[in-house]
Image (cartoon, rainbow, N blue to C red; front, side, top):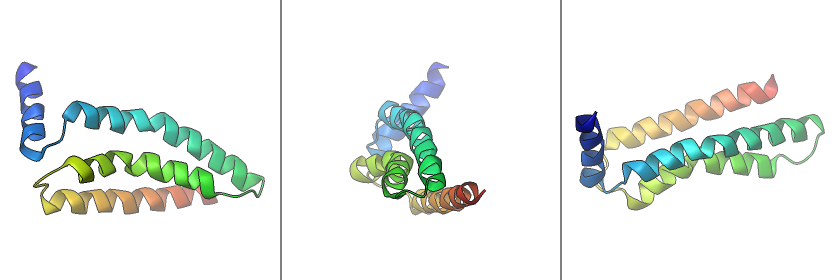
Amino acid sequence: MDSFIEWMYSFGEQYGVNPLIFALLYFGTIPLSLLSFSFLIRNFQRKKSLFFPILGMSLSFIGTYIYLFIVGKNIPIWVWCLIVGIMIYGSYILILKINR
């Protein structure tokens, strides 16, 4: 287990990102995302503005990657491509769920 933790922190040193902060942001934004999604569905059903629920979901969804963008250094291009792919896929799934 110690070797795994050392391995994870080596990424932090190599790319300038604290893995603990990254993980806390990643998992800490899940409740905010779910709350925003529930407001999104409620507002959609009541035909109210979707701006703030979508903004909340967007910020909670990309917050971790904003941290990576701000403090990260020498991040490989394939990581950025993966992040963009995840964002596109997540947006597609969100649109499907809203329409359902």
